[in-house]
Image (tube, rainbow, N blue to C red; front, side, top):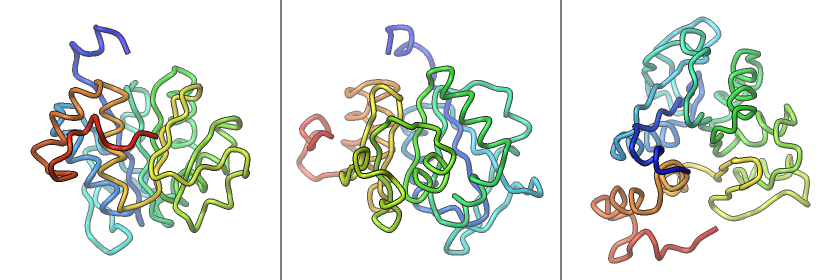
Length: 206
């Protein structure tokens, strides 16, 4: 991260699809907006629908279909979980290409819950990276690369992974750390009372 990165607005694409886990998508979008990031919610629905039903039936509304922003470059691509949503990501050649291109360009890839296993591992996108996933999907990750911590960052792959809805706030704050630094993450976390009476800098680190 350079000084120039601190002085410009970070851009993030949060992908959604039918079956996306709502907390993982909404918490991430909300927290990144609190950081002042430019967040684009991109629908990967096969029919191009901008309104999709999440894993609990809550309607999620995208800013655009992925196909309309696929040629844009973002500082980070986020893949929420939810089995249905992750399977939709897995089966979308456009989504896979979108993630691969951002990985090739050295951008942060952030995936949570089922997405690390069903998307990243399925397509062998990060063959040497350490990662975590929802406990129900951790066996998809080879033991030598599997971690059971709530949030895991692989510095060589610039890959951030996390475990599920209950870790989605930590996941989003760690995206802020990686894109804008610890001070910005603390600025966002403190008024949220993420951990009462604790400053973000003293939270257990991965």
